[in-house]
Length: 70
Image (cartoon, rainbow, N blue to C red; front, top):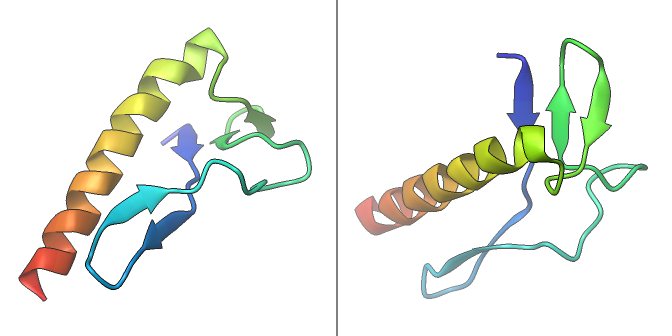
């Protein structure tokens, strides 16, 4: 797992899950950590943008399913 997408997830009392894009995750404001280069990247970089979007969809799907099951 060379790249990790980092998110802040907000869930309201109705179970609606959203991603908070306004909160800085780290000092560089990047949200994708590359374990190989040990650097943060912004999701707008071409190399990580597609993977970030896929990770975002998977995360929201999992959060919504988990909330629904409880």
